[in-house]
Image (spheres, rainbow, N blue to C red):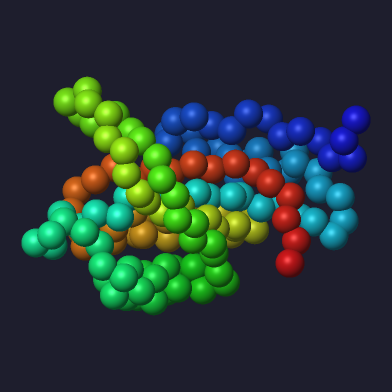
Length: 143
């Protein structure tokens, strides 16, 4: 048996996401770890507002400094990835993207979710309409 309690299943719909703060105390972490909400955002590397359709390294660096660092000054992780997804027309697209990972202390979840929404809005307004995947889960973390 693990030395920590398994949290209840995370909410699956946005309407229920406000309840998740109430669920965090069910996560019992071994010292020195504390409950954190792990937020993962999935996005591709296209820029629909660019003539070549690609997000340049300069544009990405500016986005990190102007948006990510502003909304998540305590830090985060950016992973390059490749994957596939189904388009609205039913075809499958393969491409490269990025995963943005932020760990949020349980006591700061509500304002940080507002920051996540701001990051998603910035992605869509700068680089054109797109789906941005948003995933959350409670984890034990320490720094």
